[in-house]
Length: 304
Image: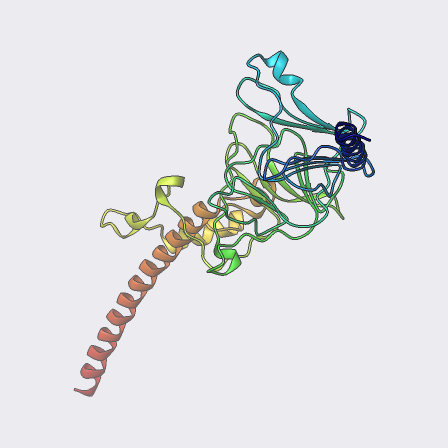
């Protein structure tokens, strides 16, 4: 075999070995730009020997470079049966859309609106406003109202007692739908706030109760102490009680049972009666002192 034939044979052997290597390992370019196809595992690697079906290292995956909404809608990543999950850029405002029949986050916390690398502190951590177009259930899987909570609700600012934290509720006064807390056992309302601002409750417990004069148009009875106030004689009060079985200016039991009464109004009228009672006591004290003076004079005359 001459030298030329030897060289040809060596070249063919090289081609055969190279082809065999290619059949086993696919394309391989040296360096960080290596692209590898492994036919035995059907894995493709870009910049790395692949450990998954498609493995990219040191770069990004970009799909599409179009400008119309129609073209952009097809630039998507589809996983599953083409209707299970789709991740893609749908609208002209660069909105990223996720489409799936369900979403399930098995472990870890989910954060929405967190910035500067902040981590979510709860299973769902939302920073900013949240909008729900449907019903929301907490502690229930089938809410029947816009917001349905099963369990306790605590409102606190984490620095004071729970009951001191203010709760602000805004209701539309043009609607006839009140805010109602119902006892589900007896199916009766225990607390109600109507659109016109009236409040109804079975019982109210409070450590302090303040009345704002400008809010209720409160009036007081200090005019009872005016010099021109005409104090009803006690004989007239006695006759009124005998006839009506209650004090003047105070509603009867029948009226209270039928119509109830205003707490502010009753408090003011009770003050009025206390002020009148004070005037009666002052008059009686003056009469007693006058009698005592006359008795003293009589005793002096007797002793003389």
